[in-house]
Length: 340
Image (tube, rainbow, N blue to C red; front, side):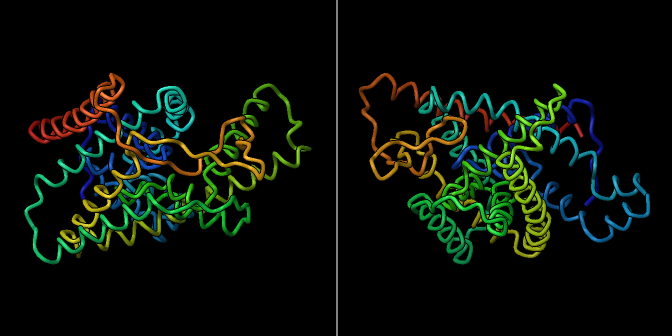
């Protein structure tokens, strides 16, 4: 795949898209892959990841760093991954705050973005036939089924944590399939995306202050080991899934698009704004909290809102805002293509 020439503005927007992907990947029910698909760089993302292969490692080992960087489309991947990394410790923290204080409106905005994504993907898809309709229905059924599964209990076994890492990147590579929500179903969302990340954040904060006391903190070292294994699993999943998806996109593009469209449609049930949060409780009915003091979410109970409520109409406004954000991305993508 030919690497496009990027202006400074394109690079800035690519970084912003990385921020959006990072934030979306952390929110249960929302797929960072949807951001990539709607923003028009999904295929380049998959093909660039596919270049992280044996040939790339040979170039790296032989010290041919410039060739390695060009071969893996390094400028594209580095800007995107930098955006995701910055998002993980900044934008996603802001998102966490709004979910805690304005949860209805956050879910409403994401719901609108997914509705807009369905329109965006579907409007130019002119390959409907019996085969693609069946694939689309399969995608919808899987997406809907995921929203009604009951979560498992937390498991810190390192082999299982590695498996969770592979699964967690599904949201980046498969639009409509939320890696964060899958981690909730596997019981390890809090362990891997809250506790271990907080442990890393606290460790860096202490290191900057010249404090090395964490080396004698067995609990902290255990959390850092879990995060390292989870990260290794994520990288493994990212590379292996990208090779599989690259093959599928090349040979079964219409069927793949149909099932992605189904996935995204089915995920609407996961991000339905009007829902009551179900927290994990102990044997005495007390709500359990994680190490950061946050209540542990296990699932949601959905309901139909009261149409007479002003809060309902405000949420509908945020749904419309979410749709407009996607349409704006579509407009920007078309404008960029015209200028090339």
